[in-house]
Length: 137
Image (cartoon, rainbow, N blue to C red):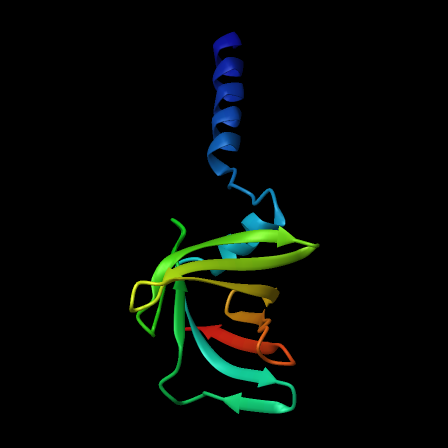
C-alpha cells in the first residue's frame, strides 16, 4: 500500500508538471507572443481625416519572428523588440534600408489580438499620427 501511495503521488506531480503551460509574465511578453510567427497584412490606414483601404489589393505585409527578426514586403529585414515606454507598449524596429542605411521605426501598440493588430506611427514630419490596421491570415 505504501508503494501504491508513492506511485500515486509521483504520478500526480508528473501530470501537474507536464500539463503546465508557460504563461507570459509581462505585458511585453504577452504582446510578443501574440505578434510572432504571423504575417500581418495592412487593411486600413487613418491619418487625420484621410482613410485608405487596402482590402483586396496587394498591400504591405510584415512578419515578426519569435527569435526577434522581422521582414516586410518592401524587402526590409532587421530586428525588433517590444518595450514599455511611458506606460505605452511599443514595437521598436531596427532595419537597414535597401542602400544599407540604418533605420529605426517605433510604433505604439494600440491593440493586439490573435488576428487583429492596430499600431500608431508618430511621424515628426507630419502634424498627425497614422493609425495602421492589420489582420493576420
